[in-house]
Image (tube, rainbow, N blue to C red; front, side):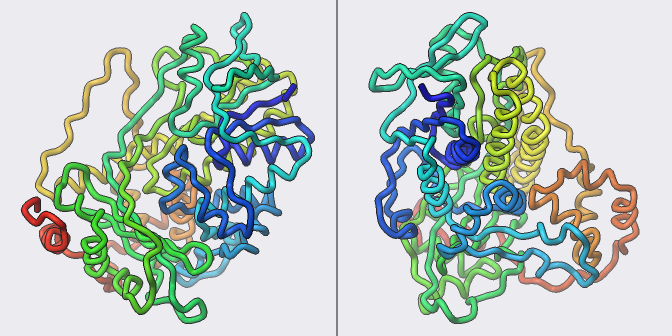
Length: 491
């Protein structure tokens, strides 16, 4: 009998299996997708077909929270990723002058593709004697006992697998909701907040692996920007690969033409810092432009009618919380959540109600602040972009009573904007805002420091802002994209 069954072999499921297996727990991972091909890791990662993880084909970053998690809990995984061509980017390279302080060593990100990192995790977990990964096996339901308590799972092949603990690591769809409904166990409602964004991304590889980069990384570990009407950001990855991702409002037919390679390239050439990277002499594309509708921000089981957790069932990673992918927190939060869940499981071997309550407290402490920040930031971005496009504001539906109010940002917008401006010249303010962006500290934690707030307020409001390239106007960008669209009548 497997003591723990993990439904889902993505980042969170594999990390949790690795953490538990390293402690001697017997773990069985059930993954509905096929296994990765054998052979050299980077090549195998590129050939790994994962229809159940479509987002794996898009740009990801592992921010400082994720790097610190690996350094603390799985240093061999980090070392293996680096050996396969991943790189650490030092965020302090973009800091204004000033003395270093303890903690600055945490301000790094890992430049790696999601597929490469997942395959490193897969091989590390599979190598443990007490971990079994079963591919092409999907969980379709759970076994239950009075309480209620989950006592195992049922697979699509009809196998009934008893388990001390079942973990839903099925990703954004959070399959455990349907399992519980089919078993007649009521589940608490989720909290949700739309992201209101479509993304268009493409991977490239540099032609000269030994030459200087085609252009500067103006964002320390990235190039480009989040502008007043769209975003265009480049992230380097492993093995001379980089990705460029555009963010745009849904429903804009001209911007939707970004899925066309020629239109995508034209938009890159107009966007600050990106043009030299798409010069055909500098890099070549690795595949098509991929379009995706960004998922909403979701905090599972935290809405109205919240009930006590079901004993014997936990959620991990995206099955517990989804944050707007454009803010780059999801991969790191999934890793941090998985390894901290492993700590809790070790502390509560009976997998009883105490474990369930501890897991709920962990979600409130680790995940809820970023869910709430994501809801606020997604809404603010959409309002700003819609205003630039001349579109009316989105009318929010009124939640039925007693629906939860929308989260209130812990830091007023003007104060946060002032901090971002002061960060250009004040290293202490830069450190605080960077720790927020790297998910090492929440805005509430950083702005709770009176000294930090004083430095923000003391920053000269009329201090000169360094000159920087400006993005094209909304109209100019749409014209350039429409000129390269297959159907020019749709602009």
